[in-house]
Image (cartoon, rainbow, N blue to C red; front, top):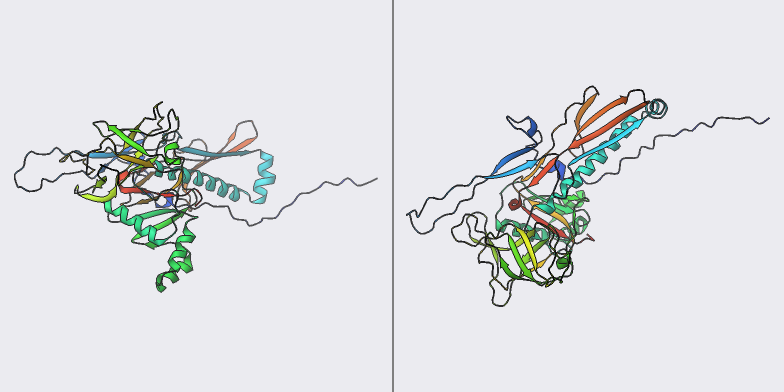
Length: 422
């Protein structure tokens, strides 16, 4: 009679590390409001904070024509609500085991640590990707055309010059690059005769600090899926703009195109249009004509009419009235001016003044279940861990979860448009 033997399955720890993404947004964001739920007299899930007031100077006389009203500028940060894409900024990683699974498969093999690491890493990656998408919803200025590769230190220097020309906070400059663009940028630097710097970047293979800016790389940069106007390189012609400067009516789109403009598409007024002046932004402070072209962000999807007309809600409002504290362009918007839009692209960012805010309060304990709060050492995410048993069901559950909110102040930032292949 043949022996009937029980097969015993064994395995050894592989020592493999978790596949990581490149965390930079969570780790570098301004966490001034990470615990805003504990701020004095703060009620609700939103906190307000001040922005520098805007003023206008009367040049040429000490006589005051009138006293200007002062407007306090306020921005808000909301935690746990829906973002601009309708995604609620909360996430969980839940899993459960029976008593037998815990005894024989998990605890007996010291497997909990690996489970915890995988759960925290997954949660941190989801939050990082969501936070990165804020790049699409805030800056209205941009560098790059979404087609030409950004692959040199010279282009980074040009981007910084364009960024500062409009006006910028003179501290804490940060740039977020596509990780696939970094090797070419570094290679361009190695071809320059700058031995000390070349040794530094060759040894680290990082862009590092350049042009008074700290450069980070990410493989989680969001993608802007542009409308037909951008992807087909259509030229729009201005018909009119409303008195508030927030609704721009243009012709030139494909008739009856439901996807003419997509929310967060970026457009730029064209130079050299016959009979039209070149449009330039005024400096944000001082109201002087800058060298920065007028660029705008579409705030919603826009379909074209049967005649190819698009009515685009835009940010920022375009104001040309002299003496208005919000004046930001050098000439009134006129019929016949032309615009083009960026095609689909990968969106990086340049920002200054620590104007990328992240709120991530620690969630409360879930009595009677054991609860712990911790910060992920890689991503910086504040994560809650809770575990407990379902009474009479032979099930022990584990939950890792977090809520967050983020906000970029638009005038402090500029999008960097990388080709989709980069």
